[in-house]
Image 1: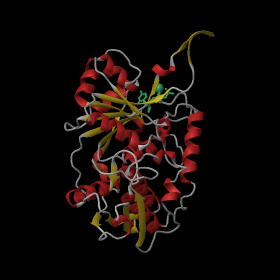
Image 2: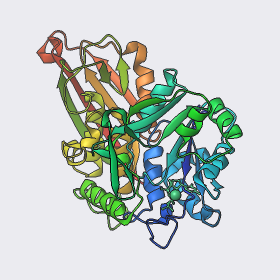
Image 3: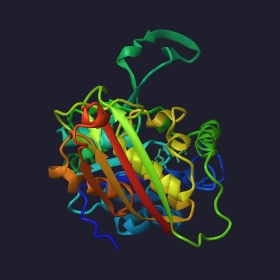
Image 4: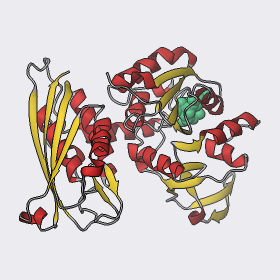
Length: 400
Ligand code: CTP
Ligand code: MG
């Protein structure tokens, strides 16, 4: 049993709508995309983030179903999830969710369950913006189509597209600001950002993601189905019988220095250190761990699940890779025993941040123990010459 600290971040996942436009005969969040509901897919991505309180807002007669989905996804973080009944409008549902947040929560993300495929990195971006001081932060995408102002069937004028952006969720706010804005709201707003703006606060825009689209119509649901089928096709079929023996796996990775921006290694940002180059952030430690785990579980390798045909991982950091790997390993009937990884590099110096890195990687793997050792190579080889970083990982998985 892991001991979960009281989180600073709360996520209200609104799933209490009826799904009139989808017309699937059930409340939208409880419609299946594949074997799993829209809500469950949304929660998998919500819970891929570092520990946050998660409040699911469900139709009053669907609270039990919502709790089943939430508990299935939460695993050993079940104490972080809860379900409350929603209201007649989205705004009323958000208010019900806000009322269920713990006193310690300081930053709130409000997320539509209907944006089921929103990648974890969008949550990270919103939280990062709030942590940097924004009162509110909203993911947006540029508007691609030419936009016209119309009256009936008549086009009145073109609207300057460069001034427009399409808002997505999760929309994040300082909790005190959002609570206060909800307390005084007397009319219905299109979204939480509009409600907070009406209360007089500036809201920041952060980059959204195409996968954060909202499932509104049957065509949107089809799109989600195709995207999921494409991303899971190469995975090994679920085992027919429970696994009998533990298994080990080995993973190695090498990245050369020369990337843009800051160095990301072992799930940490290293200010002032030279960046590594590669697809995603070049985090050789995380990639070696992913290969070790996938190998142990017999699920192929990092290219199978995170290659260039998965553009959602292009700029991703360790957390996104490891959380997805954790889920894949779990779905294949395995639990992670432990992971041990060795870094060979002249820089960065791990001693001062080793425990922090272990904690971050372990958290992304659902609390499984991760140990990191670091060594130099006496000036020999490419790492000794300071050209790059090598990482070697072994992982143990045990039958779940
Ligand atoms: N929502 C909610 N409570 C409501 C209305 C909406 O929690 N009373 C949630 C929905 O479950 C959804 C999100 O708000 O996750 C965005 O709303 P929308 O896409 O409009 O969903 P529905 O209202 O369910 O769909 P429709 O408008 O087609 O009925
Ligand atoms: Mg609606």
